[in-house]
Image (tube, rainbow, N blue to C red; front, side, top):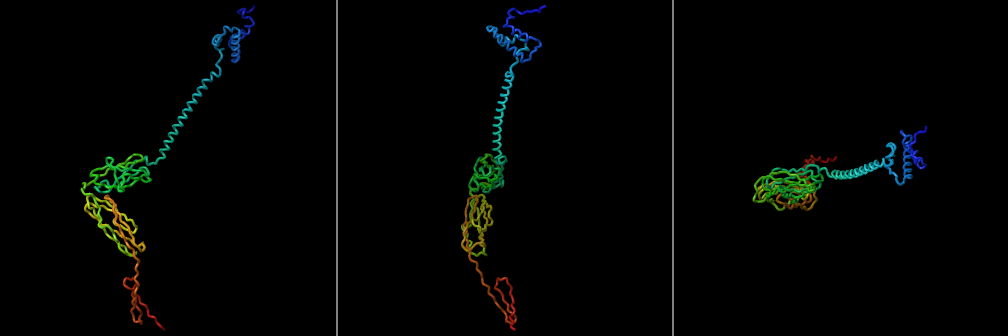
Amino acid sequence: MQPFDDMLPEEREPQYEELTTLLQQSYRKPPSEALHRQEQILARVRDRLGITDGENAFNQEDVGGLFPAYLKPLPSVSHRTGWFSRLVIQIAAVLIIVLLLGSFLFLTQFRTSSTILSQPSHTRGVLSLQVTPPTVALGGMLTLRGSNFYPSGRVGLTRDASIPIVDTGGTSIIHADKTGSFSDTVWVDPSWGSGPHIIRAEDAHSHRSASFQVTITGPVSLRPPHLVSSTESIDLGNGDQTTNSTQMIALSNDGGGQITWRATATESWLLISPASGTISSDQSIHVTIAGDRSNLKVGSYNGSVIFTSNTGRSSIPVKMNVTPLQLTPAVFSFTGDGSKGVSYALPSGSSSPCSTVDPVRRG
């Protein structure tokens, strides 16, 4: 018995014979052909359909619908890996951007840290100002000491509501030393007035400041303090290297308030005692001026004693002569009759005792 054949007559034509064979191979379950072979068969079917029925050719989606799902061609390797490649590229771009931003932030932070480290450590310290004494009378002197300021930097001195303070050197802006410290003196003139006052020292580099409170006592005198010397010049006279000369002078305050003074000599052979002090109103003090000739050669010498106080500066000229050393010859006196020896004595002032010399015996 012949098997049932449901093929149409036109399907037996030679042009459809190969197509029929291919379709029969494709619909075998399970498929006996390998995956790559299935893809080849489907490709040939599509080609044959395109050649056989060009006017009613099926597109890829129509052809795919004629076959089982397990015979549909798998996506190509390029389609499966395309999204992964794009993802890798995007991740790489993000990483590059992050690295660039991180490098920029690191360099910025490094430069900032380097700038901070390059600054002296004192800039992180607390500015300090000490004033002594904390209580002083009008006309007195204050000593200011500061630390942790900018090395060799400028420091402005003010009091109360930013009133400049002029120190004993005549300036209101001083300089710290290489360690950031300073020491200065200030005269308290009558313009301060009695009562509490705030003294400030401002660092011109960091614009930070330190302050200290002092108390000024005493009423304001109608007469300003005035330093007066009992002499306008000093003459220490003549003398040799074994002679030193001294002269005493008097310093007085011919005014109100208080005078704080100090004295310095322009020459090393000039000696002053005492060299500093304080004089209240209508008081006086004695100062000794001495000249040391021990290391000087013969000749005339000139110098000055300079007095500096809250009333100003003054000087007294000093002159002195050094004369040659005078030697007195020794005079001998002899006593004796020649039979018992001879005694001799040096003149008055000699340290040698009297001696006896035995007579010369002739035999």
